[in-house]
Image (cartoon, rainbow, N blue to C red; front, top):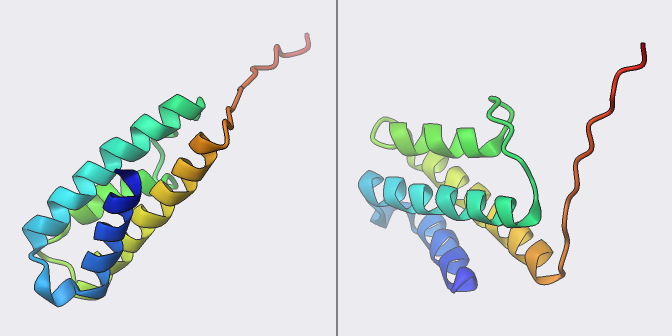
Length: 105
C-alpha cells in the first residue's frame, strides 16, 4: 500500500502538467498524515518548527494554486522520499527513544 502511494507521488511529480493543483493538495495532505503516523510509530516527535519538512509540505499544499509546477513537483518528490525512508525504517524495526537530561544544579 505504501509503495503504491510513493509510486503515485513520483508519477504525479514526473507528470506535473497533468496533475491539477487540487490533486497535488490532496496527495500532500494524505502524505502528511502518513508521515506523521509513521513518525509516531517510530517514536519520532514532530518538531513543529519551520525546519520540519512536514511544514514545508503543508505550505505547498496550502499554496498549490499559486505555485509553479516545478515547486509542486519538488514537494511531491520530497513527500515520496520521506515516506520511503520512514517505511524502510518501520520495516526494519527501528525505534527512536528520546531522553531528557536533568540540568545539573
